[in-house]
Image 1 (cartoon, rainbow, N blue to C red):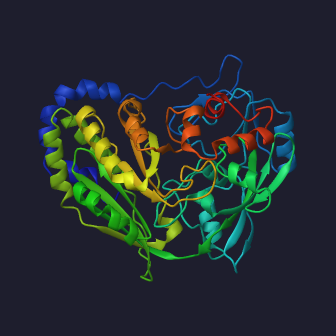
Image 2 (image 1 turned 45 degrees about the horizontal axis):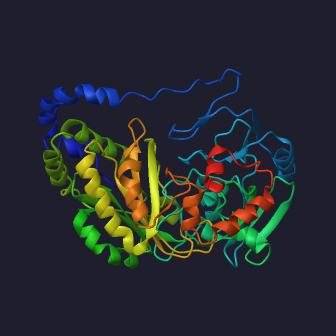
Image 3 (image 1 turned 90 degrees about the vertical axis):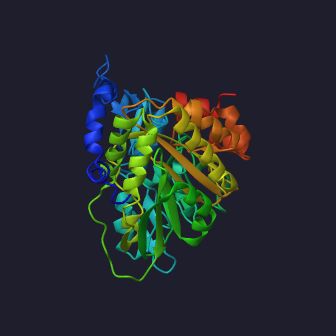
Length: 471
């Protein structure tokens, strides 16, 4: 989010002295909510080892763990290992996609660039390849992915399985660049599919939540390696809301973060350039985030003062520009853990929805300090893609991992639902199969393909049973 440092908030504004005077009244409350959440036992009563997702909100004690090194080993696991069989990438999903007391399966032993075609900018990669590793591997052969998400720790198979996306004018989510893939099924088959061959499987399983089988390899339609100018700028939030229709068409990649209780937003753009390289400097996002938290801690019960102090200091910060290859700039490090709800809305509902969400949070949840992220994603034809058949604006709302996130469901999700939003498959939501059936035109067709590929439900844990079968 640029050079939004804690020092800028607390020293530059003179907040420190005022804050120390006010701190006594809220010290106890802050101490309680700053406690580290309790860690589940590292082993259960049967000696099975703990697995946890990145934010710590989900955990399990798998009865068996598998790390196949090739497709033959993988097929043996899918055929013989105890179910539910759940593939795991980096564990960055907040939903309970992975937990199982059966078999936890990782594709870390099946990763890397298999082949590439310089004439078409296409490349085939194994399913376990992490996006962070794929960037430099493609750059070495003169290619880059069309887009990247904010976090690049995911495996390529996990990223497409959950509809992971970036942002950009006319740019689809990661799975939109997949032109062919190979999937291993619990019935022991290896199936090649694309838009012409086994097309129904391709359309249904491309965003498949790991419920159709295991994606072992994908062929990506990439683009020639480019250099981009990244610009980070603080602007008044209302001004950004008004300018958003122009911003999202003017820039190749654009997103913005709404900073609650500040009246300011951070606008981030990426555009192709031939300017000389200016590498990104040290990351300051963590310090910025902790600065916002400190303001909340001291002035939660005086939001007018919190807003005035934040707006005053944020207005002084200059824009920041960086130039480098796109894969080095589009994704970011996110060491501060959080939980997240994200929905994808019809593009015309993007700003009306964030207006409602911001107003509701500032009225009812004065403890919220995490920025809210807004991006734009092009339509595609994958049957279970949240962007199926429509351009979408996404809104992501976050909560610090140490603090409760009940407002996701009491305040935020009802607004998303009113605007016909579809939840991100890897982010928190409360929907079941009966809800999804009304949101996805090809829901029934996708269900039929899933049952054909996994007739015994070996890939379904409790969460996915609710997604595909409840109602």
